[in-house]
Image (cartoon, rainbow, N blue to C red; front, side):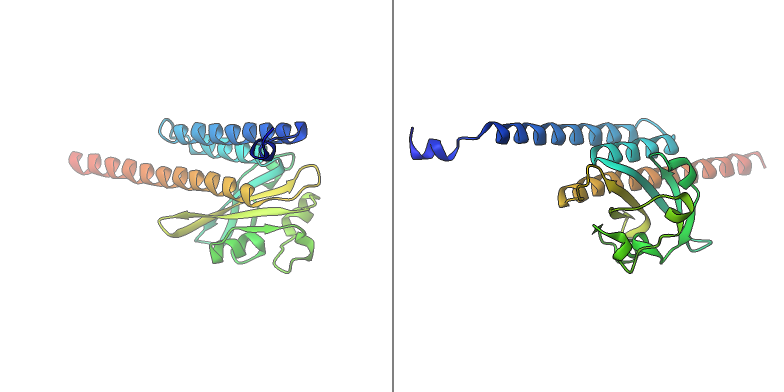
Amino acid sequence: MTADAQDTDFTVPQVAWLEGRLRQETAARTRLVEAALQLTSTFDTDKLLQLIMSSATELLDAETSSLMLVDDETNELVIAVATGVVGAKAERQRIPIGAGIAGWSLANRQVVIVDDPASDGRFFPGIGESLQFATKNLLAVPMLVKDRAIGVVEVLNKQNDTRFTERDAELATAFASLAAIAIDNAHLYAQLADAVVTARMSYRL
């Protein structure tokens, strides 16, 4: 066997690891394509956002995730969609727009990975305490529409005592982008519907 051949030899564990990574990448791309196709086939924004967040939670191997939207009237972040055991209880909860790691991510338009939130000065424990939910680690991604920050996606508690990685951040960013497009499309559709109704009323007058 030549030296070059020896350099490319893989052990059984290495092959198994590479095969596992390939399956993960294939699954991630498939879910992203499925969600993207849904963008053009449905106006049910709630259903679409639930699909996006459920896919993100599963593919990132997390305990739960949430999608928070900016409420300009109250200057708060509102949890619009949440997954996992505490999902239903977490939805509609609110935090001040500048509070927490989510608020920091939104204000700075940066992806944030935090391995120990309790020791991070930006952490806002209010919702977790009210739900009796312990946040062990988290990943936060701002949602941007045409350079405007409209919300934040948070993914919480990587399973099996592991940590979120940069690859996780890339996937979360992709899902956050799809969610932002879905929300923007819903707003545009609502505006168009209102314009049609107004035009019909004016015609009748």
